Length: 365
Image 1 (cartoon, rainbow, N blue to C red):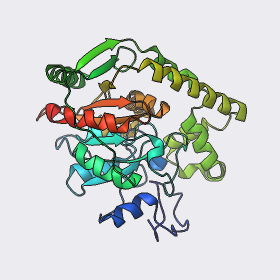
Image 2 (tube, rainbow, N blue to C red):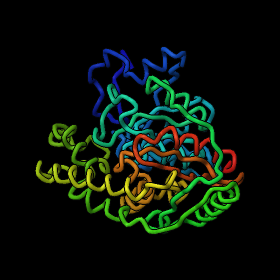
Image 3 (cartoon, rainbow, N blue to C red):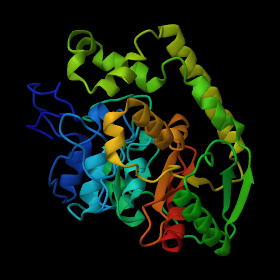
């Protein structure tokens, strides 16, 4: 935002120069008549799917008035602001799930578009190879309105029904260790989609199990975050969220040769994944395998935090690695903690996926 310093959830940005111009995301929204009403809290430097921030406090998930639960991250405050009705939409970046995870945990719709669709200029980077500028809102239609403004042109969405839609439900990885609430809501959602005419094909997708190995050592997010933060990590590491610092540090020992190898192997993996998905309209799976965890245990235990973080990112990150597009749609019933169902597709299929999400949305609410 012109005239403001982008804090990115950190104290390390205090005293840095203010932006001299608004990011295209902000400028285009204002030109379209939107009001930018505030800046929201987030995981430091967008490097967590949990949403905890030790510097500025952790926004409380509004879904549970009895127990404090995390909102999901990294766009934690954005999700809470929309869930509380303080904003129509919340902006953020999605590098491994940072829009879809908090949207799912707070009962919202989140749309991670194909990366090239929206400009990254003016957004503080986590990993420029994976970062995607996008938004969350209460409905698919509202997400598409915002996306059209951010991209400079609306998606050419052709209305459709679910009749004959072919959805691939992978047996690999995405259904592991579902908690009871997620499993129940997801199974109910599948039954509704099937009753509406969708053809759900359940089969292995072994490529999903390859992501962790291809993305080693370090991982693209850590490698590229180290490139951004190496100066501060060497001189004032104690000012970072120590959990963010641990993840950024994973990028330090990675060589240029290792980095190039990851990029090359990722390109091959994307080609193989796209070939496997021919003939399907979308992948379908739970957005996150667990509901929003309670906040207190994650504040005191690094082990509990990293376990939750890994679970929350597990199903969403492969879509970033694919350079794909995805919607998370609420599929829980009243009285249940929020659960998200994710529809995703390879890059460039945003319009067709949006039509599918529009058709599925009323069945799942």
